[in-house]
Amino acid sequence: MYYTIRQMAKMFDVTEHTLRFYTDQGLLPCGRDERNRRVFNEESVNWMQGIKCLKGCGASIEDIQEYCRLCLQEESEENLRARYAIILKQREEAYRRIAEAEATAHYMDEKVAHYEAILAGLAPDDTNPKNWTEENRPKHKGK
Image 1 (cartoon, one colour):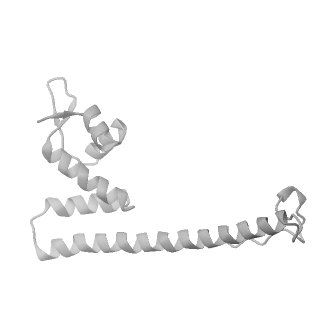
Image 2 (cartoon, helix red, strand yellow):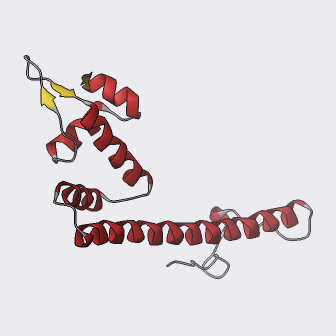
């Protein structure tokens, strides 16, 4: 069975532009019809599913390209270990994002408590930047 670019875009909830990018990058195989329009087959669906999985894990386009390049090579333990390393990297990044999200949630919990204290009349309202001075401006907690 063959799919048009519009059908593939709908199937994977991506834009047609995204599919063109993936095909232009050599990540997503496609053929051409008699009018030179991209057409996709079941192999294309398989590759797009893999791309979506990696993208959903937060993989960069470079990591996806490397993973796809490895998949096209002859199967070997070395090849498998290289793909495994990409997956381990994505897991590490996922845990980093979780830690970052937890830190943000903790910060927001503190902000909520501060606003609740202000609303209860237990603390002065110091939340409006237009009222800050150099002396009372909250300190930036950058990375």
